[in-house]
Amino acid sequence: MKKTLSAILITATLALSACTSSQSSQTIETTDHRQGINTVHIQEETYEYPFEENRSVYNLMIILQSEQNLSFEAKDYGEMGFLIEEINGISNGAEEDSYWIYYVNDKQANVGISQYILEPDDAITWKYKPYN
Image (cartoon, rainbow, N blue to C red; front, side, top):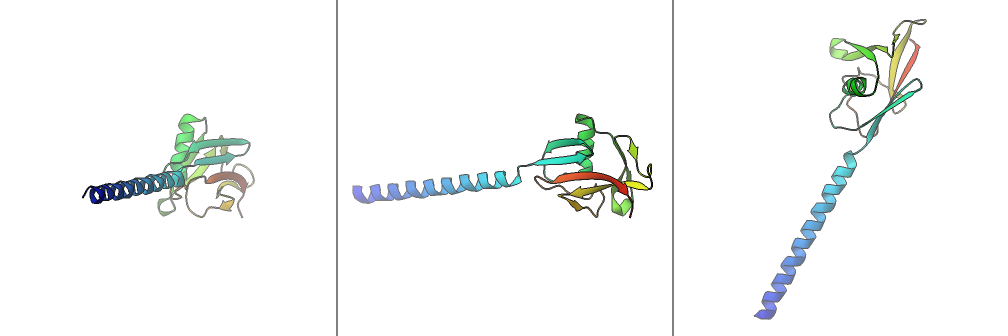
């Protein structure tokens, strides 16, 4: 009887240890997956801020404006969302019909800055270029 009870206790302890271990690694894996830094490049300036789920480029720009000396103006275009009108004193159309265009991980974005939801480690690059 003692041997049977000991065997049951050892089996239960091992089973609980296995459950605790698998839960710990699963939690760590999930947490590590969502960590990251979002980077914004504007001409010679680089701004970095920790990633947070459900944050748009627009929301990040507002944070950078209040905390890291970035200046910008945006306008709401309804279904297209917010688009940039001016960054750090340079307005759209100020030079030869040039406009601010943003890229996400080196690919030109096709939605307004309020509609693009950032992923961990996304790099946003703003370019002031002639409209084509």
